[in-house]
Length: 528
Image (tube, rainbow, N blue to C red; front, side):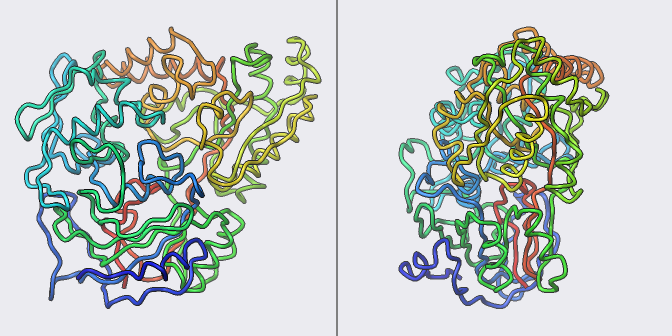
């Protein structure tokens, strides 16, 4: 059943998250197969029955929100895209290749790790009735992702020779690598590489798509509406429709949930989440390790005095990590050790935990001639905890003799102009839960703009060697060696890993079955 949306009513609700659409009867989703090619299509008398419109609220990007997810800076841009477009696959530690495939049915790699062959799932259709082919995947990877300014999409171009990629018939794509890599499946199947039709240049409502839902309404800074795509490959969604609302304030998202105006509130602040703990109509569903978000501060090595390793070490020693976990997150977070990707197999857990030593930090700053230095930390509420952590970090820096201050940008604006962001001397940031070596390749290697001036060819070489090693123990050894250099000399202060504190109404089920919980796609969600 297709649900029709009243455009004016929907846009009036927008970010305010007003009265709910009527929902049809539905049952809790049963466990569905992990194999998208199973061909399950819910219908009359099937179990679970499809029905209802799920309403979810996220931090948006205001007027900067865009349907072009390859260049969209906000979390909501990617969430919207995952509901709308098919994905190559998602990371899945329980999967045979460490991934769960989407529009692909598998990926083979050559013995010398120089070529990856992507096998397209037969019968995947776009909303215009045409079948997805290798040409669509090539266009999405080579033309669109390859030209994106966002590091997460530049990852394909940093690992594969997209200029030499080619189609081998309609159902096979051959991707040569720039250098031998053993982890190419996890690069391509991180949940963010989505497929659009060959020739796509602009993104608009009504364009052909192959995701679980088709877009019916969109207004930047307010929200979007979808209806189920009944010819979606494999698991047709249980839901009739989906609404995604842009609500920047955590308290407002929680209020919309408890009042019944929405069914799912994404990434609530710890303070807000505590107010929901005793509400019988609401269930907290925090993400678990390794799907934790790393909250960090980036020191720009292109700007003095952060070009001095003593200053960088001083800033790492100045931060009181335990206080941040207790004060900002009420203990519901993990202490970080200035490296991303905690919980993934390639994370260097053997390195010693960096201590809180403001006295030594002050000494190092004096040795570097930077005692009394002035710096402004720029951050924004892109995810709950960023601003609160920045405030505490500034106070920690003051105790080490730094004249520090905080500049807070509005929600959705920190990354809106990425070139300006990457030139900041000191900036807040957060890291998606992605394996350590992939994260390095995506955001740090080769003088990437998001590396904030880090240019360490020896570490790049170590990471490349680790990623080319098919022996897991040798790869782990090389990867740990590279991460030790980052730990000792790097320009990232990463004090905390926090869960996404999501909350949902009783009867909502299946959202986390999409795997990429930080950016859910709702393809398996259902309403009771």
